[in-house]
Length: 324
Length: 243
Image (cartoon, rainbow over all chains, first blue to last red; front, side, top):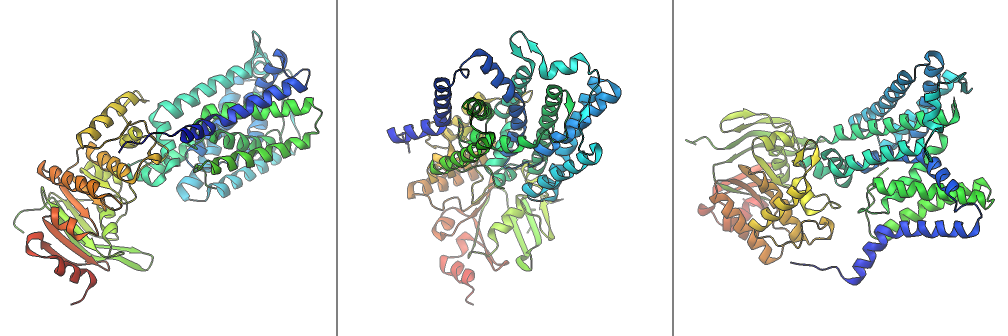
């Protein structure tokens, strides 16, 4: 039996895979025409810089989501790691040590999420929500809600979030490095293939002899590590440890990851989709701000985008890989 | 039995909640033998083969492989013994292409990198060998017909050169021609020395290829006879339980 793709089928596939990107291009052109400073090199690099942390945290989230999971803890975990990272730096002045501790904390958060969700079997949503809540609590307990200010922070530390290599902000370089790693792991390795298989059909993965729990645990740890990386860049950019610094990342990362499911693949979140999605979300913030649209409208816009993205996926007959 | 069979399952019990899915079931599978496993819906056929393939563990009972007691805890344990399964729900990842599905769980890698070319080339040749026509192994499985999907599941099971293949309703929802292909394939595999457990609701199919037929009813074994020494009426009578 040989089937051929009809014209309509072809058009549908194109729309499904590239529709969001095309919409993004239209938004880009729209803002470029309606505002004075949107379409400038300066703003372009500014947007890349702004999207860098969102992209990094969303890429970690993508691993969890690709395996059919969900991670609600990323926002509060960012805040927690943020203040701990700043404190270690404040008290020791040792940047590598502080980064190491941040990464360890990220893994620990991921390990806890994974133990609860993958091994004990709590629903992902509940497990990671609870872990996030605990992270917020520890954060507040530790700081009393006050920022951790750094006196004379090391140069190298400030460079991570504020430095430039030529015209390119350093966080943008970090973003591209993380993006490249994520793309390689997701698309080119056994690990990535198995993660997608678990998200696509966990029973099939089990039949194939794949240790579903273990791989799910791994995705949570990867997400925790990306939260840690995001926190390090964020702390440097802010120059201090802010207990509530990460709060917006959860909503934004969810928007980005759902947007990514509408692009390039077969309904699964993808690394390249996350990049385009993060760009669209950042572009909207930038453009709407330039148009003097009040910031609360941006929340409304993001909410509408998530609804549109998921609705379009469903209308295109795709099965989303996420169950909450 | 004089000769020790390839697989010997003894006194298998399996409970789901308070329900006995299997009660004291014995099951033998010889070398190069096709055993038909029949029974009404809910008789325990799928449960029994899922115990053999490592998806479930039995509450009580023993499994012997070539006379040696084995503990099949996971699907990997079963695979190591050379037991592959074509499950009723096929176990395919819908948003993967054919090649990736064929190699799921046994991905060829060089230093952790997926060898996609190899997967594509190999799956094309396996499917060709089985006489399965698919335009491209890069097609997404979701878009294939029921017969093609089934063929891929069978190809996937055969690829790892198992000793035993369990086929849980491999012919369900297949066209007549496709069904014949699957049955012919089973005979060919048997000639190559494989043993097959074949579950089907269609007794004509069972009689056309099997050597022995085992009948389950409400979790108990009610019949075990050579295919040549029985007939459809007797099997049906055992299945529905009229004495």
